[in-house]
Structures are given as C-alpha cells and as structure tokens.
Length: 292
Image (cartoon, rainbow, N blue to C red):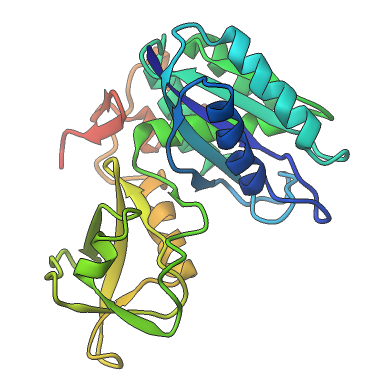
C-alpha cells in the first residue's frame, strides 16, 4: 500500500462552492470507494499577482490518502472525473496526485512549490515539473490553469512546512479564551508555539480574536500565539499574522552571503535568491542553508 497527496485548484467561481468544499467531498468520495484513509485538508496560499487569474485568494487545497493502491492511474482518473462533475462550469480546474514514495525528482517538485509563492508560473512549467517528478497532473476542464496551483499545493503539502488547516479548529470560538491543554486535546492541533520562541505551558490561557487555525510546521499542525498585555496572557494570531508566517517561511530573498551555484543547478533564470545559491542544500522536504 502507498501514501498519496492529492491537490486541487481553481474548481470554483464566485457563485459556487469553494475548492475547499470540493476537497472535503473528495475525501469522503475516496473513503466511500475504499481507496484509502484520508487525512486533514490544508489550504496553501500562492502568489497574488495581476497576471494570475483567481477567484478570491489564489489558494490550493491538499490532503493525504493513506493505505492506497500502489498504482495511482486508475483512481487518479476517478478523482479527476469527480472534480469535473463538481467544479463550476466557468472554472479551470487542475488536479495533482502524488505517490510520496515514488518521486523521481524531489528537488524539482520542492522548487516548484517555493516558486509558486514567489513567481508567476505557467502551465508549461507545471507539466514539465510534473514529468520530471513523476507525478500525475491533469487539466480537468476550461483552460486548465488550475494545474499550476494543484502541483504547487502537492509540493508544499509534501514538504510539511506550509499550509493551514482548512476551516481551522471550529470548536474554538472567537472572543473566548482556552487553555493550551484544551487546544491540544481537540485532536486538530499537535502543538502550540509562541512567535518569540517561548513554550506556552499547559495551563496558560490563549485568547482567540479570530479563529484557531493551525499552520503545518515540520509535519505538525501548530497554533501560533503571541504575548498580549490586553488579555494578560497569550493571544492566537489573526489571519494577517498567520499568513505572514507562511509568506516569510517560503519567501526567497536576496542574501549578502549569496554565492552563485553552477548554471546547471539554477532553478530561477535570474540570480540572487536561495534557490540558485551554492550554500543551499536540498533535503527530502525542501532545502537548508549550510551557513545557518
């Protein structure tokens, strides 16, 4: 049996159910067909740019399937057909199905995930990367531009260091406070971490101004909090603060220590970013800087 990541994008318009809703239905469909056991859904924010068409936020949805068949071609087509039936008539959906144990080129796949948060990409970029990585990628309907986000969503989910729990932990209501222990007992949250590096204690109080939306961090769904004098304790981050963490984590900046790598190792055509640097080292789930 195998583990897969499924990611979809651009399935909706402003008058129809969102991509997240279709992803949730798709997990039910997978389990109803006996194709495996589905994990939680993560929302992955991609680049906002005038040259990128999107319905509202340019985000992809991804989830895992465990204990699935070794070969994905048959059931990947089943999932694609489901998306086709459920997507908005005016949408341009794409779907990616990725066997986590059979990635032919993990570097290319990881790089595509980073780039989708930093650069305008094309369908040609997506299909070229999917072919190199050996993953299933399909333009389901319309222009098929959703393949870009679908591939990026799969890459980011696989790296386990991006994306927030779709919908959040809904039992925790805005305007109320909860202990760290209560958050961890919910089943939706693996850890609670402070933005300053401090470790909140089990009995500490966390005020919720917006939602409790864990961010996938090192494979763990993590709720980020900050100190608040107003509430005499911790406060869960709001939407802008949550998204800022995700952006900063995947932002590719110029660096004064940058050293250009060999041409054949470049990911971006222009130089000066982490992905082209001789000091970055690819790992199975992204890259690290050897100078840090």
